[in-house]
Amino acid sequence: MPVSSRNQQQLSEAEGHVLLPRREFLKRSLQCALLPSLASPWLISCGGSSTVAPTPRLASVNNFRDVAGADDATAYRTAGGQKLRRGVIYRSCALAAPSAAALATMEALDILTIVDLRTPGEIQANPDHPPSGATETNINVNGTPNAVNPPLSTPAEAIAYMESSYEAFVTDSGIRGRIAEVLHLLAHTPGCHLYHCSGGKDRTGWITNTLLNIVGVPQSVINQDYLLTNVYAQATIDATYKATAAAYGQSAANIIYPVLVADQRYLDAALAQVTVQYGTMASYVSNGLGLDAGTLSRLSAMLLSWG
Image (cartoon, rainbow, N blue to C red; front, side):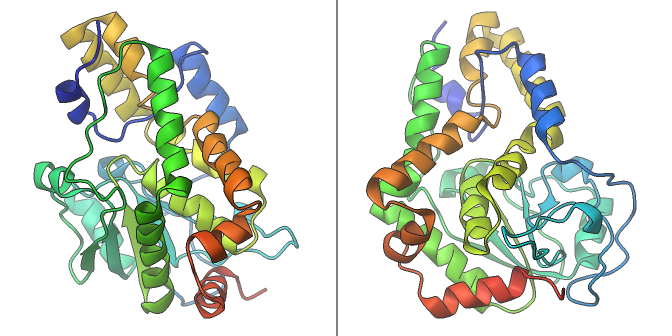
């Protein structure tokens, strides 16, 4: 059964893989990801020390995480070995229904700036409920009124659609300009930041890929970070897949699955387009996004640790 654009709109920004059995794919994503223990509550908010407590898991904002890594022991490092500074920039899914406990946790982290990457239609359907004290800015990365996928008839069509969507992060000049706007805002706004889209995977994932490339994290580590969506959001992925099967049949669920999870092929499609169009990520950042040396220096200074 084909999945209509109306049904797709209900699932805006889910993401996926179908060549492997569904649970086996999620299992492999977990095995390849560097997921440390996340049991401890936060002890320190932004900028107070070189030691920052593990990032908490937020059940109601399930793809909430620190872009520098989940705890100090496994914080990401640059190719030269310099550890990234945690507690500065966070990423997540939409803040549509945060619990009181999640809001209190985010408030304790002193998150001052929230950048919502979604379209107006997505925001209207599921408005954010941000923590108190935070200023929210909308930068519609897609540049469209809503995020509606085209009708998809097969899993292969869904995979091809996702790959082309990622390629647009590189080929579309309007999208590039809005990605640059996000990174410029992060660089030139004081305090701790959070950016998000709907599921926290596609728009959020590519901006994180770009940000970590700017500060020199190896692509292999960035790939593992990208796939962590399949770990953090597994319950949501499973629930959406099952609900689609119940409402529209197993065939429809199999078609939508490639739109539900993170798949390395999607990130690779964008990276391949970078190679074709710019040669390197550094050239994409400087020439494609037009970020100046001062902005790049500020981003590096924000995310590189004390030692």
